[in-house]
Image (cartoon, rainbow, N blue to C red; front, side, top):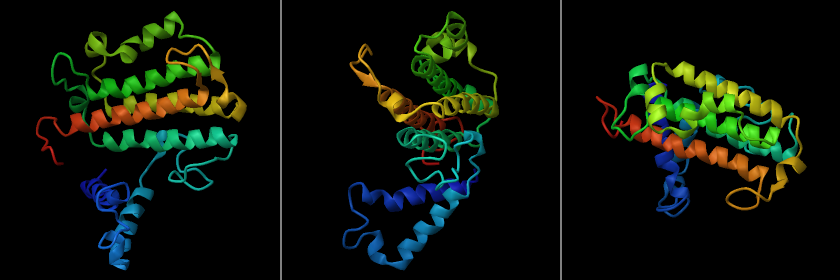
Length: 241
């Protein structure tokens, strides 16, 4: 991502932030009160978002039935499953944006003995998705073989700090893409009744498959925030970049 694109995205968020609180963009004197000038600025920035290369997120990116920025039913999935897929797809592309231009050294940088690297956080997202695949698609826990493969990324901690290193950005994005494509293929086999099925024995209380997979989406958002926080503090970076 170019510096101009990153700056444009920040400007778009800054201009529209008032919609959610503070000085509302629709209030007197707000952004949209300035008419065509404000609207044109939002339009130019929105166009830069639409034009990004989203190929790394897999087959659900830039969906034929409305595009990545349209949350709702998607072709090839039942209505509610498609809506979930559209949310997962929209959130997944944030990882690619947030790590654009990072070197292997950036991905391996460890701030202290209890921190996690950006690379480890990216692999952790894939490991979390693998766990929920096993739970919701297969109805079982991870096998011992898969625990051995994914354990350090799932648990992070010392094991993750010791073993998750030495890879470039494409390595992590490739695993995320492969993991998501498996999820999408499985979602296509299931209907809304499956999505709404409740697991009464889930640790935090009765939970349907929709909530479990929305947690996967929320999990991406959570760790994406950590990644951005760490990126701004990498050696040579200035906090506001």
